[in-house]
Image 1 (cartoon, each protein chain N blue to C red):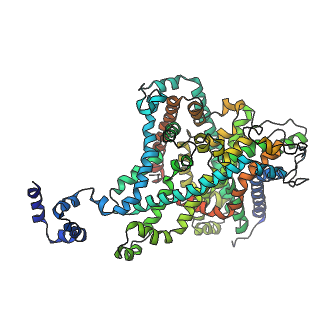
Image 2: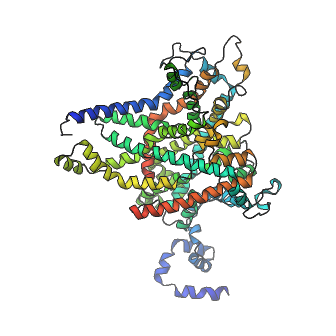
Image 3: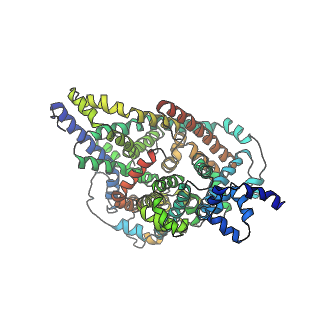
Length: 341
Length: 293
């Protein structure tokens, strides 16, 4: 059978094909396996042997992705199970959509859902236009050194994590030692407990978010402004357009594609919240207005040990989030022929 | 510019510059305020604002730095940052290099196998259970392994390696060197800028990471600096600060606010010091990232 199968292969091997399998072919022939080898070479998996060193470099990555990405993805089945500690994820019994049914009837979940969307909308309303305005105004600065310095300063908060910034703002906004409240008190006004007052807390979240990301968010707009053809500006000057008219009729229209894209993506991220920020800044007294999906998942899951329920919440959010990414990406492609994939 | 600055244009320039200065001050002021608070003596009064405290004292920093949990925190952060960055750089570039080769078997399949994980993930609970089941709790591996290969970094590395012309590798290939040797002898030396960028990203990521330490380490000696800081500042000072190191002088008044400020400064100063040097690498990074991969 061995010979019968392989002989025709040899027969049909013309000169060109022989040339192709020169080096390795001979090497293997020494081990007396040339016939087998010719078949192997046709195999789709031959490349793994031929480029074994390259494959060797890739193996750690496969192991990593399987263990730390694909196993947790499998672990999402927990959302359809009732977790039992002793039996693990695989052994726990299936319960179908029970966790989700519980989820949608739970008042606390919808409150959290509402908080997440509301905070995201506020952040977009304030945080989206701010970097654009900043970029346009910064572009009008003539002194290159001054411009560079402002830019560098504005990026700084982006590099400081929310844990640190939360500590910082808890002191900065404190009613007893914070400078804002010291000023208020010096004017004879009552101090405001920004961090502990449910009426103020969302504003604090939005304000500190804009403060942190203003400069960093402007990079993409600044880069696009830098790419505008200077001849357009020169033409506008010849036509007698002043500064404001140039911003209005040259800079802004040139930015509109990137603004559109960024806006579509911002819409796609409405369901996403900033765990680091909310988790570190919030406290018991503002939980009602501050609790978002990720902090809720954390509290329910790791805090109260409701693993299945928390996984269901996480999956619910991920599905919405993924759907929105897909939708926004296809809208972005239609508008601009440019998407993330 | 050759156009003459006219009246309203000049006013706009001045207002614009003033606005920018104001913006810069409002960005920096919280940091300056905290620095000044941390350098204040403990009996400072909070009725007036000042940039330079009336009495500069380093007592707060002395106290914070002599706290043994802060010392553990520094050690743990250093270990995870150095070890984690080195391992991460290694495997990220290995993976990126192999996928950069057009002849890599089933390249498209393996690339999408990895890219998919950027959009689909298990989420908090399954990942936590995995780390727990792997018995990684309270070890440095729990802080290093789950983020060993950041997919975005891998893609950046792969794209860079793809731009290196094959002719560069040819001579070594004729000499019979294998892909691993070629990677270290030829690719690494010409990729230093991208390697430096990836390393810096990872260093900053590790320095700032705190959540993994909070959920994966239960032993307070294993907590990273950010968690120690978090416990002192956010969860209240009393039970965290080592009572012995605080009360060595009983007549001393301990002011928690200045101490908290000093603790925050300790975790922030390294970032502030290195920031001017590393900033441009990050800007470059976002420019690469915003281009289509």
